[in-house]
Length: 183
Image (cartoon, rainbow, N blue to C red; front, side, top):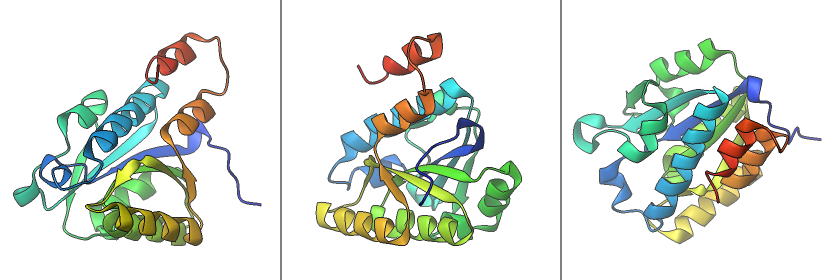
């Protein structure tokens, strides 16, 4: 059976191409920004590693400020490849972190997210996708992308499930901080 348990010591959060110029075209842009920001705050609260990628930054700009703010010290990696893990610098960063699990959000589900998840799975990573923090220009393409991700072996999850799985226990100061992100 596949491991459906997130390990906070072994996870890297990955934010794929959440850029304002691209967001304008997404059918669910507000949901992407809201839930990706929550995930960034979760990563910050638990002290997890994070990677931000941006597609063709010269023309499309950088990560949405709201999504980037909780982890402003984390580097953004510009890329031209659709598969983030196919970019040599990004691959080197993933590999240097030594983590085996990836929590992933971003866009577009059926293009850059799909190709990145495929490559990460092929490289032996366990990938947990926050379905409510993914998007495409059309809902149909996003749903199709999600089906492909599931068929490939990614764990299709959501922002709250990821938050509570990583929190693990109620009643702590950390949990109270995390809980406020969704209430």
